[in-house]
Length: 273
Image 1 (tube, one colour):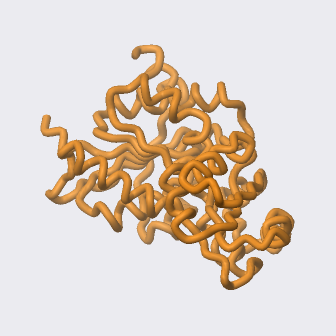
Image 2 (cartoon, rainbow, N blue to C red):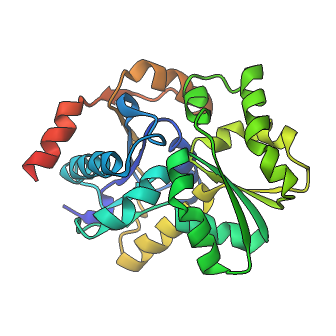
């Protein structure tokens, strides 16, 4: 089979990776996509590194079995805790979102706040990546355990969500950040809430933008960029497809056809490898 025509695999714990998917649609409109949301096991951000690595291995083996040419971890927690471990285990390119996001942040700011899941914050992955690019940059990280459940529960407009956000952002405002990094792919969906709380001159950095750029560069480097028409995106989730369809419809602008992948099928993909 012509590898150029194979899809790009994109995965996240849920709907957060749709922010990366939208950037791929915008920047790489000819690429076909296989999207997987591990909704049966979200949120990832409160789990251990061993659990995350296990989940990622299962998903990657399943995706490889379905014939992807490149995989994007559209999940900051997975990128922080599993990317370096699994890259050496697979013979396809695997991209994360943290290094592209860090580069994007350093381009625009010196006092950088990062909001993320607790696991990503604890890993210091963003701080390390940002300061590797520019050691003079100041970085503050805040773990936000309630954000993903609120977003997945379609509660963005809930007054409680604003109350929670004000608590998370308080220390970043006190430290006078000039840049805010969405350290979780779910968080761009909170942009109206976050923008209304932070000073108007704070610049928001969405790593999804830089990640799509990095994917384009990787495809060009490998000679795998597809120039023919893309096939319809294939959507899969490990939990009930109905909530995913309901919440993703408003962000994608169309109603996706979402299929279910049972967790034993993911486990079997790893065992068969």
